[in-house]
View 1 (tube, rainbow, N blue to C red):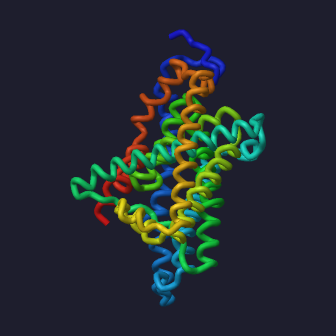
View 2: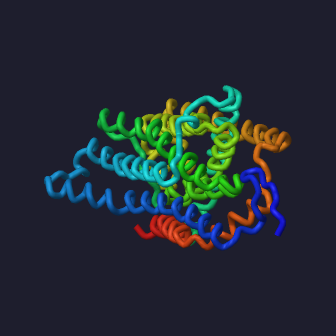
View 3: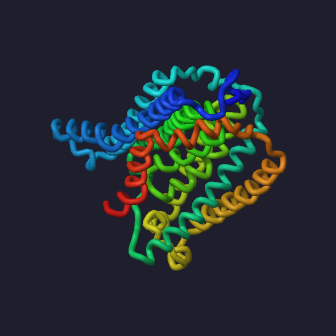
Length: 348
């Protein structure tokens, strides 16, 4: 077969031979291995280790708010940090060029933040619709509870993780290790895959919707500018605004906040709100839907301009899905996340 020029290698054939398929499959399996390590550490090893230590020392973390928050933060921090370092070693990644300003401006970040905040509202609406439908069949999945506690040190730790450290680690793992390791042959494939995994890693369908939707623009901008900083800044802003909104609602309208967590908010609870609670609710609605409509405009403009991502070549396509589906470890990743996201929350 005649070789072609694909743009990502000097001269290669369209269809990879057996040896190249094996090498590509090994690359895909290494990326899946990083995710499996994160899954096992987060869901089993670290939780078991901490609970063993607490039990051995006679500490009841459920009676100490700071220790409970510390435990809930340390598990993802350690699992993601270890996975990031393993990914860097496996793929010999150099993150230094990606933690610099590579040609993007404040307008790029502002548009990305606007788009993601708008998608956050759209995802919440879609999640509410799905939740309502599932409840008609007696199904209700649990999500992570990031409510503020009565302990100031515990709250500071929770906010530090949720608003800063968590977003940084997640971007390094999903837009860093995963996206960069999978983009070699087909950038669009890598963007889609990283968005799916970013949604699944939250391990509940509500956050899967949001993670998948924002994962696409975050990955597109990361690849376009070769920098993780826009995605990190956007992620920090999103988590911070969500945290501030939750705190204001929790402190001004505790009953409404509790019912919102349980998905039982109704008109009766809204009618009993304090003036401060009403103000918070109105401001929140204005900002949410304002950003959603602004995001629609940003999205339309971006689509009209287009040409942000190069189209995959025939050789690139032949090196993604046809080989990817033979990478066994990815089937393990999808099976694990499917259970943890769409089955386990409904049975605990």
